Length: 378
Image (cartoon, rainbow, N blue to C red; front, side, top):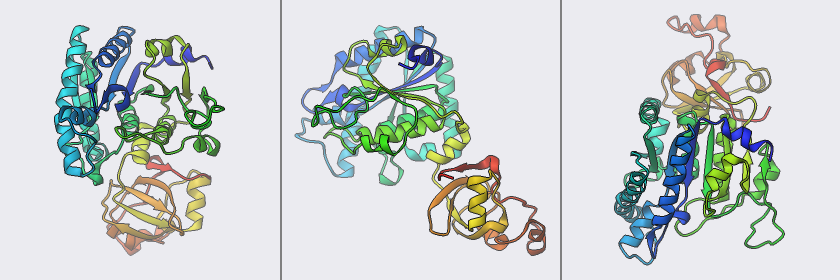
């Protein structure tokens, strides 16, 4: 499969994500044999010289079982309470499993706010780096006990892609309860075929990923494709495979597994641009004219004051902002060189006129090309 063994064996940093359906049920709680198997497999990868991070769902499912609830709660406070009960049980299971392998683990709980804040993003990056350098395996989950809708990532497929970007991983493996991406839902259509290789995520591939999920999971193939987009744009390989298969991680690195491989784009975003595109929450926006839009999308230019029509939000110099066209469509994101107040004063100015309108302003580009990521097609 496209020299899979050669491709993945060159990967030094690996993120593995395992979903709720594989780990726990509301009736029996945490599947301890599955936890033991994942610990053994990750330690095998570590012995092969890989740095490994585990993103694990299962806290809410473990909490539902521990509290003997008939179903997963729907109210936010109740969900948070159940996750608070389940998370230590999940970590206890992992700690025992990795201790059998002679390995230490570390718990890292994240919210979208932790990742979208530039300062907190790089603080987290440094923490992961220190742990990996010591041979410790971080076990990551969303901090469901404090995350409200405004700061939730929402699913661990996207969280794992964000973590892969944060640590500059080479490979993300999504362990699911399905073999990979199919042309249709295989449980409803016997003619559905597994897609073994995706070299480009186009409209045809997107049609395969319909929104789906189960009572105890928050994702489905739809969120896995979102994760794949984040990964391939950042130069990260991604694999979807069936975590119920024994030895699946070994098979991936031997090139013999059954699943779907997503190849990264050749012109991958830098770590900073990937963060701006997929993680950062823009503090505001600018609206640009058609000439500026063409310059950004087709001529790889910086955004000049002359192309700015309007600005909104509450941003300062250094903040990430959204770049929109006249119709309101987001075409790019970038790091603003000035505040919104300054942007509104110098908008429409040619470079030589900026100083005349605002003598204290020395800005030539309001967003430099190096600090700009394009989101729309040219």
